[in-house]
Image 1 (tube, rainbow, N blue to C red):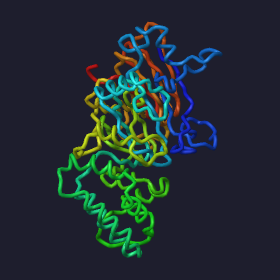
Image 2: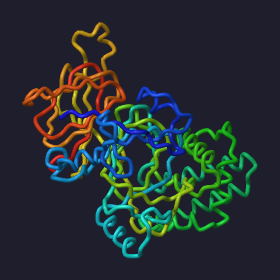
Image 3: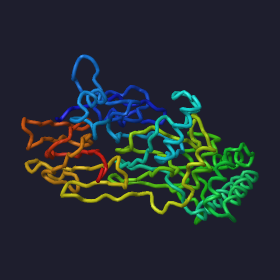
Image 4: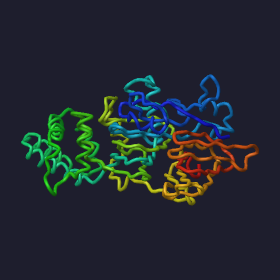
Amino acid sequence: MLIFIENTPRAYAWGSRRALPEMLGTQPTGEPQAELWLGAHPGSPASVAKATPQKHTLIDLIESDPELYGVNGGQLPFLLKVLAIGAPLSLQVHPDLEQARAGFEREEVAGVPRDARDRNYGDPNHKPELLVALSEVTALSGFRPLAEARADLAGLARLARMAGLADGAGALERVAERLQGRDPSSLRPDFLVWAFSADPVVEAAVAAIAGIPDELVDEGTEPGPHRRAALRELVSTHPGDPGVLVSLLLHLVRLDPGEAIYLEARHLHAYLGGIGVEVMAASDNVLRAGLTEKHVDIGELCRILEPDELAEPRFPCAELAPGLVAWRPDVPDFQLLRARLRDPEATRPARALPGSAEAVSVRAEHPLVLIVTAGRVRVERPDAEFDEVATPRRGQSLYVSAGSPIRITGEGEAFIATVGAGA
């Protein structure tokens, strides 16, 4: 079965006001629209489009026939999203599976309401996630070498002195001193605890970063222009927040369209801007470390944190066939595919996306969730007993039940989420 699904974007404060309406072909509401959820997560399940006068969610569809519509007789283990990031998200960490199960059980036994503001674990599942950029995306992801953070702090201190902020410069130098002389794996969690301890040095250092004029430049010194731009954005959207200092410990990643970043469980990260397609395990477990007005539990975050350096946040794709690539992290919950199609009879072939093909075939041993991000495509199941054909355009989505392979043609681009290889 090829079933059109839809959802209402979630209106978080960090969302873009125009990106998702533009993709979906809807009118902007004037509010930030941050995430479009396409899955069966109870927090915001997708609906079967125009199915009945009464709303019929994907959860309802799967429960009506788990063997036909579900995965191994249950709900989907993955969630597909489109993110429209208009402002930085919180610095955050997601637990691994063992940590999530233990934390969830601990809070259940303690009687912490699941909707309590200080609840850390809303479900017993982990939340690895992968994002592919549709526009340029900037993100903070994973710890970088401490020497690089110290160099940036030293450069910021010099700029602060040039701006006449002597006390702030001294505070930045003292912050840098905290990043040397110890094993990095124990130093990083301790630094996070200190950063949120209300030490006046932290407040003075963050204020100094905010006070450095944009036009002030110290040639040949760190931080570079992209890091300074990220810091300007953070001090503007989260004035006085200790997370501004914590951000200096992390890789600053700039993804071009088509590049991907994989966020393993336990790695500290934050998206800063851009539009992307994201797939994750079906969980909403988040522990935050600043750049937010939500609950911050630094002690618990540091307990589950991966304190070691991350060599490379970017994640490569594999070409499966002409026009079809896949991102396949080593998790059973999900993988993400991208199909790019060109119409052999198109009058303007130069508009075809790079790496496109006239047709691609996608296996469907498990259900698929598909969203078209450019153009219009034709999806059909050639080996089905009855005709199964759909022609979604940009912004429209399909739920594809498990069965024989689907064939995609047309002109455009579609992303397809399904369970991980070998699941």
